[in-house]
Image 1 (cartoon, rainbow, N blue to C red):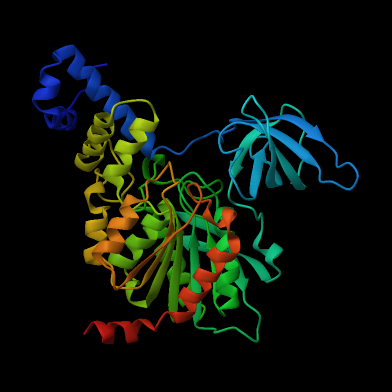
Image 2: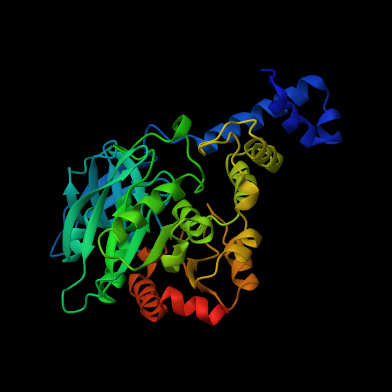
Length: 406
């Protein structure tokens, strides 16, 4: 496929002499591959991943636990997890690994089947979500609807115990790319114990939510607008200060809201888990994971930056990923930040979090932890929640922070 138009030409020139040396046909193929990669980065998946297979089931014997045998990505991770199966309609909870088999499969404790029943041959994915509804935490939970320019977003409103509540303090929980709001429920309890009301939100391109512009993701830049709509909704109901709790790309959206948003003055801090803080570098890493050269990711990033691949931002064609780096965030964010991240993250390398913490040591606290991408809570939930609760309890009022800065 030969790329057409001036934007494709911009991408081709970015390869420089290296691509020219490949010859015209190879250069066109390289550009086409990079454009395809860039489109995939922006496009929500239509079918949930189902790479983990149930290959064995055992009922508990002599008082022992029920067990399930799994083979596939993340099946053998330490900790406790959700297993989402049957096309995303069913949910079970997995305890620790009990045994490893020689063929790469593992036996895990089967703690609960919340929706649906696991059967031999069932396929799904192992996630860190754990909870299916914040009401499981024991706090008063109601459904909410947040109106945006594109339509309505579903949300959960979770209230802390009345004796602890600070009516003016709210937290907004923002999930990652390809996930659902359920991913963020793990962050609600430490906020509730600190007296904070939580709003667990969906955003554009989620099931049942408005379609993003061109049906694409904005890598946090467009999703920031839905975070801002949630902040405005909270303000209308008495919030005077808001903490943003973002996971993966939800961390990008949260940082963008705190750095560039219309309600940034009321944001008192950020809690980020496995955040995507360096999108140019992340595209190169994702290219390598996909089995293609890193330069495909580099050219794909150029395609997004120049608009050769049209993005999701209102009023513009490009997706300015060069704004999404630790160096840019370090100069733009002026509130305390707690980052949960670790070197075991194979999906979003934690070196961007390390860079941000080094650039702004007075503001950014990096908590290094074991675990895969957005699965740190699952390895040690007590430590994750204790660090989060201590951080949000210590956050100053936004106006106090501004006074300190001046």
